[in-house]
Image (spheres, helix red, strand yellow):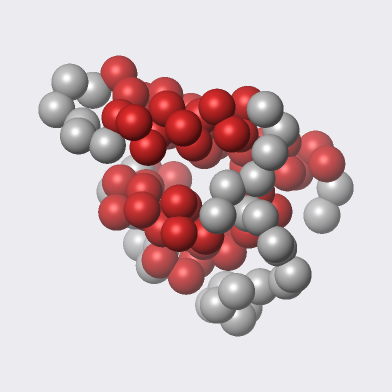
Length: 91
């Protein structure tokens, strides 16, 4: 995967994180701020960190009909210790 595609995926994730941070009733703002800082610093997040926001992401228009595995696989290039697909291929 080329760096342009990775940057595109990071932009999508940061867009959603910023949307969640702007919502008043979201309770995980500390985690979201931390994820934003990590990604903006060109660092990678952990699988566990990503999985903690998948319940938000799977409600987004872009990810409608996707399961957890598909969402995690989509963002894998942004994950620490990335060594290929975590959950197998996307169906």
